[in-house]
Structure formats: structure tokens, C-alpha cells
Length: 260
Image 1 (tube, helix red, strand yellow):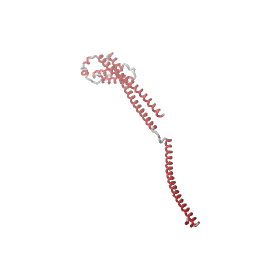
Image 2 (cartoon, rainbow, N blue to C red):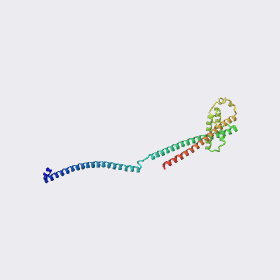
Image 3 (cartoon, rainbow, N blue to C red):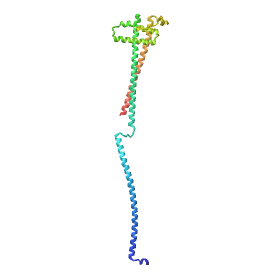
Image 4 (tube, rainbow, N blue to C red):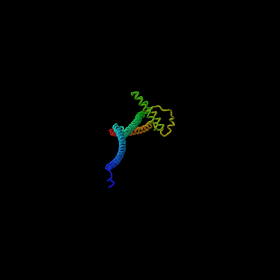
């Protein structure tokens, strides 16, 4: 064109350079914007990663501590050990209570057995004395005791204690007149009493032997009752011993299994 042809070569070079400069500035601006965007993104990523790394490090330390506690037994994953300890404590408590009850029952049985055996021995002695006294129509067991002075003092004291116990038992089951009659026969120590008043009943007509025989029959029944009660108590004690032994074996087996 006429205008273009009118431009000088220098002007063209200047315009070309100006165009290149403008393009370079635009490209530089775009690169700056891109760089700033990248820097902002990088800072954000670095910040996020720093926080996440710190959190991960803290979690690692927490897990390491947790593992150490697990290894040391300070932390348990289940309640199995606690439950076992409770079971063991319960079993031990049950065993202890059962043993205490067995000990008390055994002591009660031994006391009752001793009392019943003493009663049986006393009744046996009194029946023997009554038999002897009735046969010879004597008026007191002391006469019979004098005939056995060969016995030692301890044996005589034991025999006298048995007769006194028999008298006490007689007072529980015999009529007042018969009880005093028995006391006179066995120990010869009878408190003052109005025998005329006591013998107003029809039984006063009984002769010495008949009355003694009647009392002997009563004492024999008492002796039989005591013997039966003693046998039943002994059987009950034997059953209780066996039951306790079975319970003890069972609880000890459970304890051993819990410990294992």
C-alpha cells in the first residue's frame, strides 16, 4: 500500500521491536501470575503436609506408647483376666465359707455327740445300779458303789457324775415321786419331801421292786431314744462330711482350671 511503502525500514524495525516488547511483557506478566499461583499452592500444600506429618508423628508416638503398655500388661484388650480374677476370688470365698460352716457343724455335732453319749452312759449306769439295788432291795446306789472300792478315784468320780446326770434326766420325764425315788436309789441324797403327800396317787401302792422296774423301763426308753438320736446325728455328720469333700474337690478343680 502507499502508506506501507512510505514507511522507512527503520520505522518498521522500531514497530517490530515494540510489538515484540509488548508480547514479552504480556508473557512475563502471565508467567508472574502463574508463579505466584504456584507459590501459593506450594505454601498451602507444605502447610497441610506439615500439619498432617505432625499429626502422624504424634499418632506414631501414641501407638508406640500403647504397644509398650500392652506389652507391660498395663492395658488389656479384653476383660478376660479381670473376669478370671473375679471368678477365682468368688471360688476362694465360697470355699472359705463352706469350710467355716463345716467346722461349725462339726463342732456342734461333737458337742451334741458328747452330751448324748454322756446321757447314754449315765442311763446305762443307772439301769445297772437299779437292777442291782432292786435285786437285793437296797436303799441306795452308794451301797453298790462301796462294793466296788477297787475302782480308782477317777473312775468312781466318773460313775458318780453319770448317776447325777441320770437323776437330772429322770426329773425331766418321771413323776415327782418316781424322780425322788430314783434319786434316793442312785445317789441317796434326796431333799426333804412330804412322801405321804407324794404317794397319795394310786402308784403309792407299788412295792419297791415294781416301782424300780417301772422306772427302769422308762430309763431304757430314754436310752433307746438317745441312742437313736446319736445314730441319726452321726449319719447326718458323715453325709455332711462327704458332701463337703465333694464340694471342696469341685471348687478346687475350678480354681485350678482358672489358674491354668
